[in-house]
Length: 212
Image (cartoon, helix red, strand yellow):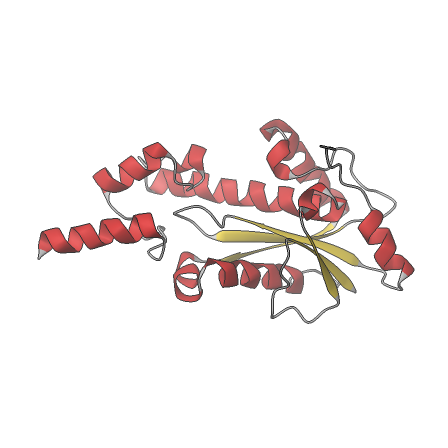
């Protein structure tokens, strides 16, 4: 299987169709039991694309951190979130799309065209756009967005871990690791847990039955 390496092909193709400002958009945090879902939109300067951009999941933590600062210094970047309450109210897919829409809307200058990681266009996004499956490994703009989103959300979870110790959020970022699930059983549900997610919902249900 050929290993995907992101490049500027999708952006160049959009430019040949007359678009000038191309934004890459990605989100992180659909799977965790706790914390927000975070999205980033990035418009790279075609003449100053950072070396080493790739899907944030395949980069080392040190490499991600270094690229995070470089991207912020040379690109137009917007970061946005959907809260735990919004996730529970809307569902995780719609909340993820809401975060993406907010990220695009927050760019200093609106893009002409948006490259979206995945296979669904957020319904609130009215700009010309295209979806790219595995886009974070194929488009450098989406790769940059994936790095910004991941680092930002990881830092949020580290901060929340200091407020709510014992759940291991500083290392598991809210994902359902064995230690996180055990902490839920032993310590209970925090305001930052997603009550609509089954493991959290089940614990709340158990607690209600015990108290009855």
